[in-house]
Image (tube, rainbow, N blue to C red; front, side, top):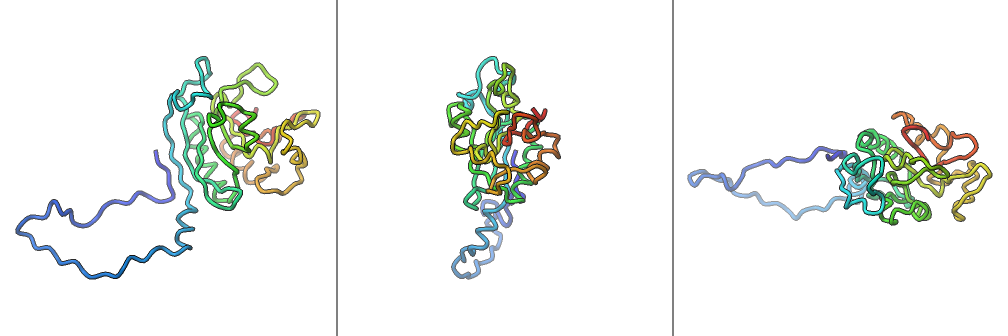
Length: 234
């Protein structure tokens, strides 16, 4: 299912295979060399938000899904979409999410794109062999991963594809004692920082997720999970 910034074009004009032998055909008109688009045109085209929702199989989720997970691959979807990077350029990313939330999440990320909110990278955790730690070390924005909640024996909302961690270094998991597991991200315990990608209470990112009923881990008491948004708020 493609969701783009412009409709797909349709072919027009004569079909040469359907021109009869007795029909007259207008001679071609002379034209100059093709003029390449200006850099400004290229920039405008590159800056379009596009999203494509696709089905996935177990073969696509070799490291993040296994038998016994709370949802089967048939209830998951891949969203291939554009996003702004920390370099100020448009990049292509992929999230694996619950099928029931895919359309709403496209709307969320469309809003973030329009706000030019920067995302370092957006890759399935399978690229990191299912390691949540390694994904965070890469400052990777991700969603589905069949794992238990941190410090719990219960399934994480990530195991249902109903949670997303965004720029996890700029928005770290901070334990109630103030510990951050990733040394390069410790400085982001200071939530007064204005670095690109840092999420603040009531900002455009929090509002975009709140609009679809998702809660933010930055609102938790004690432990804070500033990267985390989920359908249950947990």
